[in-house]
Structures are given as C-alpha cells and as structure tokens.
Image 1 (cartoon, one colour):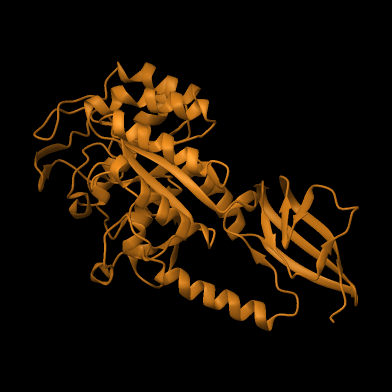
Image 2: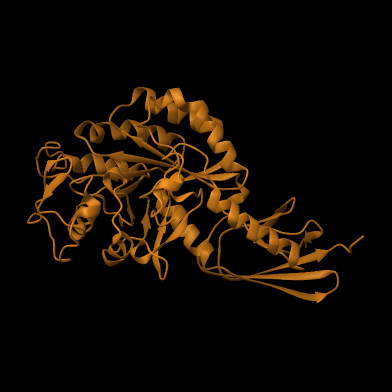
Length: 379
C-alpha cells in the first residue's frame, strides 16, 4: 500500500489484484469463527455491492471546456463526480495556460451541478515525486513553476503545487478542497505528510494494482511502516489511457463484478479531453451498475470511510436470547451496514435501522446508537 514494491504488481491498472484484501478477509474470517458475537462493518454504505467513484482529470485546455457535458449527464443521473482540475496559469513546454478568469463560470457551474472540485496540481509534472519540499510560503502569483520537458521543471516545489492549486480552486469554487491527485500519479515519499501540512484529507495517488488492494486505506508517513498519517488513499481501479475506453467496457464490468463480491471500491479515472466514446463508456457503465453500487464523490466517501474507521462497537448479552449492539460515531454517518450472525433478528421497536437478511442498515446518526436484537437458540 505504500507503493514501495512496484515489481510485485503483475499489471499497473485495470485488473483485479486483491492480494492485500485476501489477507484482510482471512483475518475477518478468523474473527467471525472465533468470536461468539461477531459484528462485521461492511465497506460500502446502504448494503450496496460496492462503492463507485467517477473521477475526472482535467489537465488540458480542451478538457476544461468539455467538463460541463460530463457534469450535466452526471447531474441528471444524480451522480456526484469528482473533478481533479489542474490550475495551469503559466504557459510552458507542456501546455499554454488555461486556468484563467474565463475558468470561473465553468467551475461555478460545476459546483452548481453538485460536483466535487479537487486539486490536480499546478504544473502537472511527471517529476512531481522529485521536486523539493518547498518552504510552505508559496503563494499565487509569485509561485511560477515552468515545465521545460517531461522530466525537467523549474521553480516548482511539492508545497507550491499543493498550496497554490488548493488556494485557486477554493477561491473560484467556494468549496473546501480536500481531495488531491498528482499528475501522472507521480507519488513522492513525502506526500502523506505534505497533504496533512496543506490541509488536504483525501488522496487518489496510486493504482489499486500497485497497492494490491481494492479498498481505501490510511497512508503512512514517508510511505514507510512506522506511523500512520491522517490521509486516506482511494486507489485508481480503471483508467482511460490503455486503449479506447469504450472498447474496454466489458473488461471494466468484469473487474467491477469481481470487486463487488467483497464490497470493495471501483475508482474510475476518465480524462475529459474528449467526450464521445469516453462519455458513452460512463453512460453504459452507470446503466450497468447504478442500482447495485453506491456512486458518490471522493470526499463524501472519504468522510464516510473516516467516520467508519473511528466507529466504536460493543455487544452486550443481557440474556441468553437477547443482544444489545452499541455503536458510537464521531460524525454523522448515513447508510452504515453491519453483517450480523444468521440467528440474530432486529427487534421491531428499533427506530432508524432495518434488517435485510444478515445485514443491519442504519439511517443517518451521530453519537451513541443502541440496537436491540433477539437471538434464536442454537439447534
């Protein structure tokens, strides 16, 4: 998950590679078999088969002009997507500036349509992972990164890329920008702590195949092994650069079906440089999975996952046939789903929770929530 073992991954992206998840499922199964009152918190809300994030990278002038066509479709489908926008205000080898005053009405409309605005750096350099940390005092417009070639960029720093892009996007959108994705998924060892230092909360900076997981996870300081950072990573599952995306629809559906068996995350990366076949892919993918998956923005899922991660659960046994489940959530959480033993049944007096088979599904709550359960005697 730290991205330090790239040679382990057989493929870079677009395939099902759940090696880390298999270990987690083994631990969960050992717990279920050994615990008398096993409660398992599902990884997708509302008892959905999996969570799907539609995320867009905007790193080209035409990409910015195309985003409203995508956003209008997503708004009509009630799908809040995440738009990682490069704030390119310096013309250089890579591209002419396109993040200008004319960008504001586009971004304002994006927000009105209910989309999330997120950072995709200023320079979009593939050597982002080799930039100096910077001073933490970089500001617009003094910060002037200049890309000379694919492998050379002047006057750039990690702090500048994070700070200035976030400032500009928040200024134009009015949103709290909390999600980040580097250009080319260039991943510095210092990224987790630098994201913390610049007030981000969520990252999408590595592929699921490299991390060998189809679940979110907490990043480690320095991408090492000793200290957890506060940043949660949401790895990319499917991207659009390995051939025409629409031609790979069946493959994307197959991977998603595999992930759905264990309630994982499908994070779809679509550049908006063209509409046509890419938009058609998104339309057909949504038609396939809209009723089965929870489609949401990265920050919404991030907040849900963060609250889930801090959830406290206890089970009391007031009698041989009764159980009381106590949950405590730091923040509002909607759609929390718990797997319970087959012999357990929800008592009818419980409010704000329902049972579907062996799953309890909770309406939005915060703080302490207690649920009364009846337990059938063992045969």
